Every structure is written in C-alpha cells, then in structure tokens.
Length: 116
Image 1 (cartoon, helix red, strand yellow):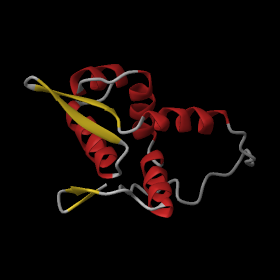
Image 2 (cartoon, one colour):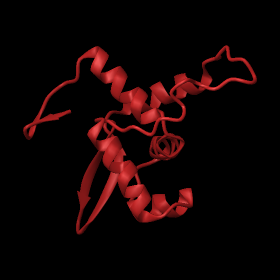
Image 3 (cartoon, rainbow, N blue to C red):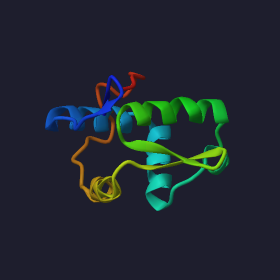
Image 4 (cartoon, one colour):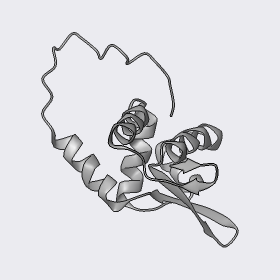
C-alpha cells in the first residue's frame, strides 16, 4: 500500500480487510479474475466485462487503493495486472473453497457498496 508516496507492506489484518473490501463487489471480482488470466489494458477489460470505461476506472482505482492491482505504463497506455502473482493463487483457492450457506440468506454486508 502507499503511505505518502512510499510503498509499505500491509499488516496481516489490513491485507485481509483490503482483500475483503475488493471482493465485496461482483465487478471487482470479475476484474480480478480477468487479470488473474492475463494483464490487460482498461479498454480491453471494459469491453470483455461489458461495462463502461468510466465504471471500470472507478473499480480499478479501488483495486489499486486496496493494493491488489498495479498500473504499468506501456508507452502511452497503461496496462493493469495483479500486484503479486500469489493473488491469482489466492483467488483460485477462494473459488474452490466450499462455503456453508443457507439457500435463502445473503451476507449481512452484501448491500453495502464500500471501497478500500
């Protein structure tokens, strides 16, 4: 995470909280899964996900603020990728986890639209 322009390492609790906030939104989940497959330019991501570039930009900003993705300059364009390859493995592990949920309930915070 950035602290006054200096890159620092998040504490265990902070890292988990940031990851949780990022995963709380289905679009951000889709962005992370797309970037898990390969780095991408925003225009390509927006088209692949079927959302506007403005909406994608907001989600990418949140994911950057959470420390999960980084923007890499490529000439005059910017490419996004996961901040750490281990995040891809973590996403795979989370996707394969078995959750014990009741069919007619949702997570209590499912309606909140917060960001990092």
